[in-house]
Image 1 (cartoon, one colour):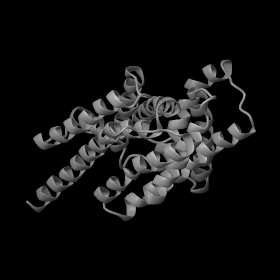
Image 2 (cartoon, helix red, strand yellow):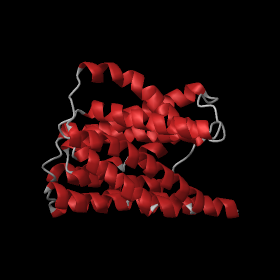
Image 3 (cartoon, helix red, strand yellow):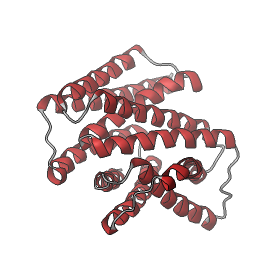
Length: 277
């Protein structure tokens, strides 16, 4: 999982260096790379790419498209650590959507953890000068899209191959975003072409290592390690992009991560107790 978070950090660096390239164009080229790699892997495994539950696969693709596009927009415009940490609110929205889509229930203590996380968001909004209300809403929107996508993935469990689920993300994204991208195209220079390719490759490797981690380790342990991304983002933002963070903003990031991790660990504890009973 540590390797996965490092590759995601590499993806964030690539996106940050693409500040001149519109976010929709970054999504477009990232999707092309993902489509090509996933198509190749499916063909090598002799698996059909079209899947079984096509309506749910398309819904997952649409939610992922919204989440990724908004996330890239915030990474390009916010301080890196703030953008990454706000996107980590996605487990909250995953849990909220699960109430309606999967019939799951939330314990009272989980609401306390979620309240702490949102208090952290307010601290970041108040003390990180790179985060205005518009960007904050875009960042939260990214987390909403990701939370919805995770619920669709869970509903697809046992119905479709994981690679097929991954394949539908660019399959849905490219037709939506291609017309606007091609009519509002900004020609990348040589370095930006390299960063666009790196964005796709880093994402693909990160997904591979993350999937492998979830297969080999307990989910709670893997989920907690995911949040190393905020530490990486703080270091990268400071060293590579000359970003600075007031202590109140760092406290806000800490509150968000503590709230989400607390919720994850508490949920796992409750699930273990139910199994024992």
